Length: 269
Image (tube, rainbow, N blue to C red; front, side, top):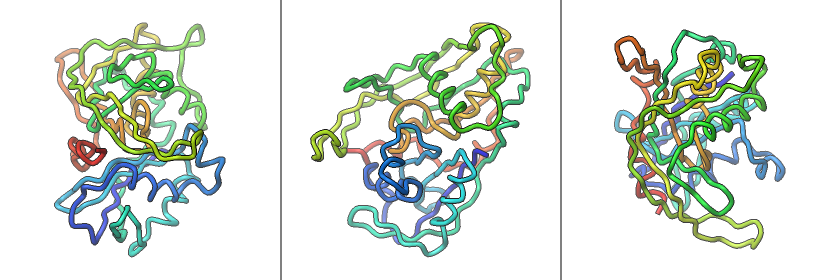
């Protein structure tokens, strides 16, 4: 069952912790073997460090019961976390949002969804990265995760695979630079990533594709969008747009989620 948690931390003077250190500290909670660590698709996502109600912390999402169990094993009050040279201690996590796979698959009649990328989103192919989203790329990535981790069938039309198109966008390009470990060279190298923040609106290309497109986009609130979501990129808020009056209806978690809009800006460099 997908869930999203806010994990407050005690002992940090500032939430300005590099994405690399956040990833190294919290991916250990879930990856218990070398194959798990290097497997491309993970049943969890990690946000950058940010603040909520004046307290530093981060969001962690889980997609499976096993991933949530591993989360709770480590997310105990007083647990010590090393973030580079800094040390922090876990405070009591709070649940931001949870849906069953049946909930995500249930169609409410919507035909437009707005995705707000509150941390930079990037789309990688080999050594190249792009800030430009494509609906097919987003939906195919979410579909892969759905089929990998869900125990509920995606409500797709029997005759074809549901797709969508981007009808509106408001994006700002950003360039991020941060160190990563190179498996091939067994060295540490620097990666420059072209990314973007802002919002897009996605609609289904065919009316009968709306249930599947909506289910996949609702999943994006837990998985994030694009590449490097375990390093805090592509954190996404999903809202339903009501076509009749073009009115924005925030998702339930939008009122209580921490502000991550600037979390990855500066901490990755």
